[in-house]
Length: 225
Image (tube, rainbow, N blue to C red; front, top):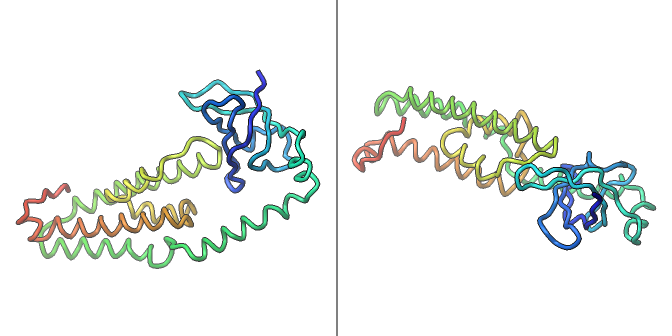
């Protein structure tokens, strides 16, 4: 059955968006691969026709999507060279990447710094080998999770919420996240996410020092390692 609606939002860098169906109802996910022609890149506020795939759970997905050519906006878009229209967002993204914090350089240096910190805490307050093992295990899981999320983004599948990625870093997986951000180039330029990410790293390191310190012992804080 053929449906129609308005392309409510469209992320051209990632190649997906959401359709607001005629008559209301939940928004429908649409990936660039669902469009029958690639001659014109989709744009927000365009009118589309599409076939509704069998829902996976409660998430609706469109296929065989087509931009309807019955409005002036679509005709104007078709008459202009599309690569020229896509340059400004790319340039803005490059400026944002240049001004946003990244995981290269000093971020990577935090990993050997963590090893030194664990060694110092071990010499001062007792063995930290279980804590080191936990960081390794949490980092492997976190790196794998980042890789899966990046693959989902490329294929237009449903993504991992950012709060889950931040939680993985908070509980000790941040070294794996730093490596994933650097090697996989995933979540490495989004300013808001990186600010929260580095905050979780600071909280984790402060918590590590507190748990092994005499103050933590006097307060009765449990050493979870």
